[in-house]
Length: 194
Image (cartoon, rainbow, N blue to C red; front, top):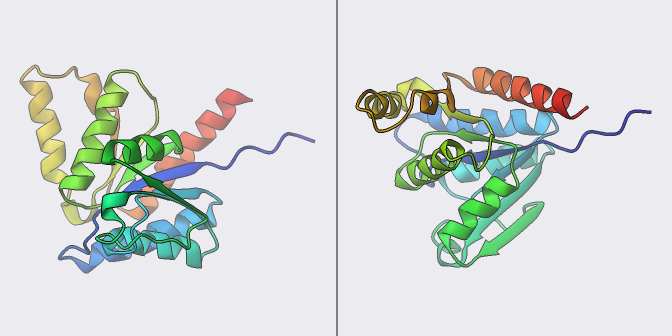
């Protein structure tokens, strides 16, 4: 009998606010549900507010595993969601980001603000430096990440990064597209280890 493959984990970066477009919350709900349906584990910032709370609740309601990481100074502000499968408290934001990425096989970035951008740029920089090779997917709901994609093009065009930087980020216009990218990445990594 073949050995059981380890559970894949999807790190989701997203806003601690709902944003101004109901489609953002819907995408968070749909993504959480899909993660659970695929038998994947959600890794996220352990908050129970905004898109963070939505993606976690949807994963839980669909029977999925959840792994949350939150720094002590955000326990109250982001309403630390202590009913997760795993709930980790760190001292610093940097520790939080490191633990999240170390416990994930891929990254999906839903709409969000400065915190989500900080997480995205750190994981992109680490990828550029060869510190990991995990897929990074921008979930571009209603064109939200269009300006960010344009900025990355701008950085490359002006010689501050190699063209390969653009290959490290995939853009999905829907949860369906993001799920397909994750499935492809996970099936490739499973094949490579067999």
